[in-house]
Length: 462
Image 1 (cartoon, rainbow, N blue to C red):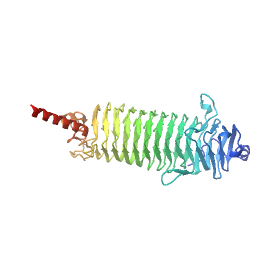
Image 2 (spheres, helix red, strand yellow):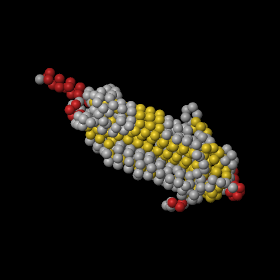
Image 3 (cartoon, rainbow, N blue to C red):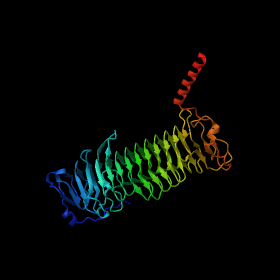
C-alpha cells in the first residue's frame, strides 16, 4: 500500500488558486508557498526564506530545484510530497539547503512539520556506470530537522529511490529516513542523528546501499534504533559509523538487520544499547558477509552485547569484537544458525564471554585458516558451548564447535581449557575442539627468534 502520508491528501481547485509559487525570475524575499507545483520551478536564495503555509505537492512530471543556501520553513503540520516529478535539493558544504520549522528558539511538539514524502511517481535517482549521480530526485547537502508531526520519518521514500548525499537529518520526532519497497536506494555520507525514532529504516527495500554515513544518538522503543532493515535483500553497508543509538524495548540497539545476500564492510558499531538482544547488531537472514567491522563497547540487557546472530551461511572475516557487555555478559551470541565461520577475527577484551553458542548451531568454525587465525583472549570466558551434546566427537558434528587453530596468546592447551565451557564441564553440552592451537603472531615470532639468536650467541661466548 502506498497512499499519501501528508495530513491532507485531497487537493482542491481552491488550494491551487491560493498557491503562491514562482520561478527563478519572479521571486521576492520571504515567499509564501503552498499547493500544487505543476511546472518546473526553482527556489533561489534571493527568494528565500520560503514559508510553507499549506501542503506542497509536485505533479505533472515537474522538477522543483532548490538552490544552495535556500531555507524552507514549514508551518506546523505541513509537508511536501513529490507525487509525480522530482525534487532536486542540492546545497553545498558551505551553503546547505535547510528544511526546518517556522518556530524560532526551542522547537515544541506543536511546532513540528510533517515530512518530505517521495511517492511512487517520484523520479528515482539515476547514476552513471561509475556510480556518479546524473539525474532524478536528490537531497544533497540538505538539512532536514524538526519534522515528524504526522508520525512518520522526516524523509520517507514510498516505492521510490531518491539519492541522499551528505544530508543531515536530525532532531525529528518520528525517525529520520524511511524507505518502503524502494529498489536500489542510496544514502551516502549523511549525518542521521538525535531522532526520536529509528535513524534509518528499510522495509522490503532491496539492493539498498549505505556508505560513509554517521548514524548516532537515535532512540526508539522498536528494534534497530540506528538502522532497521526488514527483508532487505542485497543490502550493502560500507564504512558507516553506528554510534550511541538505543532501542529501549526491543532488539538491535545499533542495527537490526533481516535479509539475504547482505554485506557489511568496514563499519564501526560502538556505544549502542538494547534492552533486548543485540546491543550492537541483531542479525537474521542468510548468506551474509561481515568484513573488517569494529563492534565495540555496546551493551544489551539480554543476549549478544556485540552481536546476536540468528542466520545461516554467515562469514566473519577480520572483524573486531571488544568491550561489549550486558545482562548475559556475552559479546558474540549465536543461536539457530548453520554454517557460521570466522577467519582472522578478533574476539578480545570483553568483560564476559567472548563467544556463546546457544542452540542448534550446526557447522560453527571459529578459525578457518591456520595462517590467518582468529584471536581470542582477554575475555572473562572465551567460549561457552550451551548446545546439547549429540553423541559425536567430531569437530564438524552437530552441537560441537571447531575452535582449532585459534590464537589464544598461549600455546598451553591446559590453560586454553580453563577458558572454555563445554562437554568437559557438563557432559550434556557439546564439545569445543581447540587443539591444535595457533602459533604466536608474527611479531611474537620475530621477538622469539631474536631472543633465541641472542641466547645462542651468549652461550657461544661463554
